[in-house]
Amino acid sequence: GDSVTQMEGPVTLSEEAFLTINCTYTATGYPSLFWYVQYPGEGLQLLLKATKADDKGSNKGFEATYRKETTSFHLEKGSVQVSDSAVYFCALNGGSYIPTFGRGTSLIVHP
Amino acid sequence: GAGVSQSPRYKVAKRGQDVALRCDPISGHVSLFWYQQALGQGPEFLTYFQNEAQLDKSGLPSDRFFAERPEGSVSTLKIQRTQQEDSAVYLCASSLRAGDSYEQYFGPGTRLTVT
Image (cartoon, rainbow over all chains, first blue to last red):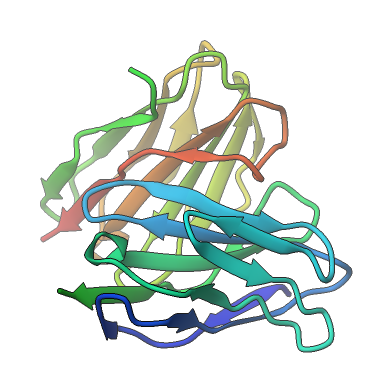
């Protein structure tokens, strides 16, 4: 079945540091890929998505590129802020209405 | 309100008690999803409604779990005879179109603790 593997957290960075959160997936066919963010006490919010190979999703300074050859969708941001502290979930949708989520990676950004 | 709301936000139940968790989706959203999120895990699909019809309940872990959406808006997830393994955050999400999980809007969740 479909699966998503994310790097273990927490990831702890200083403000303005470069962020990478790794995500790889296993799926049949050509899934759509997503990153969600969950701020403390809130629900998951869609951060960005990519629906086909080589697409780059971007939002709020975050970006991720759909790499079919490496089955990856790594999340990056050039300069993180304290307000980016949250849990980030990588997810895929293989064409049904049932998405598959990774376990989440906690990001802590210090001033 | 503009978003998906859930109540209660926190629920503590003694083992064996029944609980009811409520979800108010965004007005006009056709699709409604329930997920279970165990500690340190990602959300796992429980069930899906299209309007008032429960089209998929394949993720419900046992027959103690029951969900309804009688008028195609508010939904209730009921858990009978709660067990410790039911402790988790229960998330509700809605989307505008039928069968659309690409643009889901999530509620803040209900944290259920079974003691």
